[in-house]
Image 1 (tube, rainbow, N blue to C red):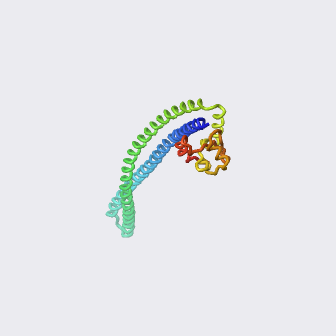
Image 2 (cartoon, rainbow, N blue to C red; image 1 turned 90 degrees about the horizontal axis):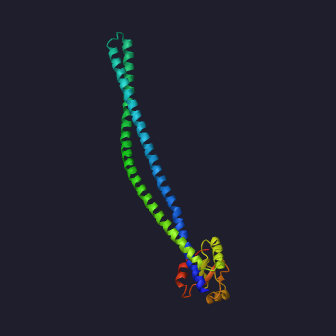
Image 3 (cartoon, rainbow, N blue to C red; image 1 turned 180 degrees about the horizontal axis):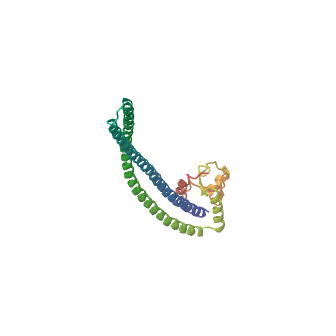
Length: 250
C-alpha cells in the first residue's frame, strides 16, 4: 500500500505543478492587457494635454487678432480726432478712444496669461512625449518578455501532461478514479500526511484507533474529517513528501 500511496503523492505533485503552470499561463494575457491598458491611458492623457495646448494656441491667436483689430480702430479714432470741430464731438471721440485702449489693455493682460499658461503646457507636453516614448519601449520589452515566458510555460505544460499520463498508467484504475474524484472536490489536495496525529490538510486530529491504522500503512485510509487519502507522514519513506504536504489546506 505504501508504494501505491507514494505513486499518488507523485501524481498529486505533478497535478499541482500543472495547476501552477496553468494559472501562470492564464495570467500572461491578463498582464499583457494591463500593460496595453496602461499605455492607452497614458496616450489618452497626452492627447488631452495636446488638445488643451492647441486650444490655448487658438485662443492666443484669437486675442492677437482682436488686439490688431483694436489697434486699427484706435488709429482710425486718432485720425478722426484731427478732423473734429466741435467740443462735444471731440469729447465723445476721446471717450471712445479711452474705451478702446481699456479693452486693448484687458486683451493684452489676457494674452499674457495665455502665454504663461502656454509655456507650462508646452513644457508638460514635451515631458509627456518623452515619457510616452519610454513607456512604449518598456511596454514592448515587457510584452516580449511575457510572451517568451508563456512559450516556456506552454512547453512545461506539455511536458507535465505527458508525465501525468505516465504516472497515471502506474496506478490502479479504481484508485485513480477515486483520486480524480477527490481532486475535483478538494482543491487539488487529495493525499495528505498525518503528523503527530493531525491531518495536515484539514488540521484536525485523527482518532487514535484510526491513527494506529494509518501508522501500520497496510490499507488505504481516509481522513474522517476531510475525506482525503491520508498516510503517516513520519514514516521514513514519506518524510520528504510529508514536509511538502504540510502546506495543504481544507
